[in-house]
Amino acid sequence: MRDYVTQVQRCSECGAAPRPAPEIGPYVELMLDKNFKFFFASEERKDLLLFLLQLVLPELGIESVTLGPQEHIGREPGLKNSIFDVYATTKDGRRIIIEAQYSDRPDYLDRMLYYSTWPISEQINMGSKNNYALSEVYILSFINFALEHDSDWDGDFVSSYSVREDSNGEIMTRALHFRFVELGRFNKTEEELKNVREEWLYYLKNLGRMKEEIQPTGKEKATDKLLEAARYAGMAPKERNEYLQNMRNEFDIKTEKWYALQEGLAKGIAQGIEKGIAEGEARGRAEGKAEGKIEVAKNLIKLGMTSEQICRATGLTPEQVQAL
Image (cartoon, rainbow, N blue to C red; front, side, top):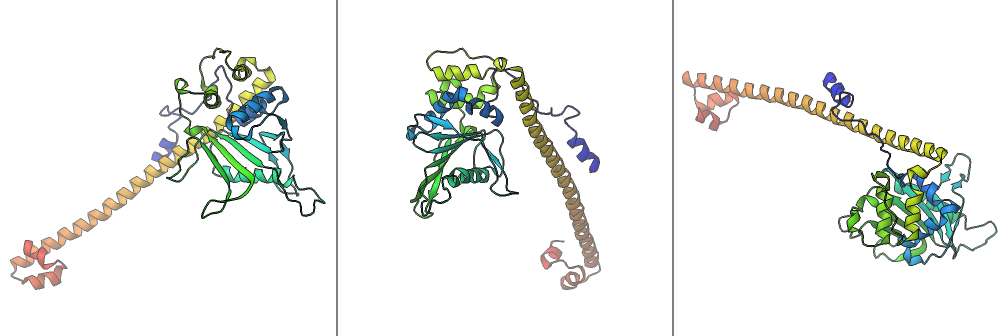
């Protein structure tokens, strides 16, 4: 079994299934968090961030945003620091954390909940006695995968959460909101796009995988600026090297997951074979024992013993003896 497992685990080296490898096209992969920060957390491209927020959170009527600090130091020694992709405040005081997540993580939702504690706690200053009035906090997350929902969930590709009463859904507070743009559920083709919002979500998900450059249309200045800023050839040498390293790191993670999957499959196959052999041997022993009883019973019949005597001697049922 060990040789077989080793052979399956090493199948990538013998050409059975190639190792995942990054591909560099004309545009960068925007959903890698460091690239997302580069594009949307800079004063130079703050207008792109504002346009994205207006597309995804139109109900807030956001007119302007102010970029805030991305790194938040743990409140006590030993507590984990938090580094947001983008942290912005609107003109009316709403705080918005914008995150991009390329690969699925089992603890991702818990991490978003932890992030939400920072813009809440920073609103309460020392000396503010009995004053806990909070401005709204939004956690806006663009994820390159799909969340698991209950079977009766009727959303499309955007899921929203707030703090509500369990039985009837009444709102406890309007201070905290979570919005997840699940690009893993956004499967429209370029021909199926109906509006600028869908166009931007399509680019967020697919721009890094495109093989050819898109010609500017001039219809939407923000979209043309996004496409121009995302051109790989337009990046400075230092930025390009950082981008390539980010891509290598991400695909190293994918490769590790791929190898883990291969190893799990190999072990599962090997265990299945071992179990099958063991069950076959046990079944063979049982069938051999049953056949032995039948041969003994046939000989006892020839000797003229009664059915009752034969049952006691062999353990067969009267029906089995009668069938002989």
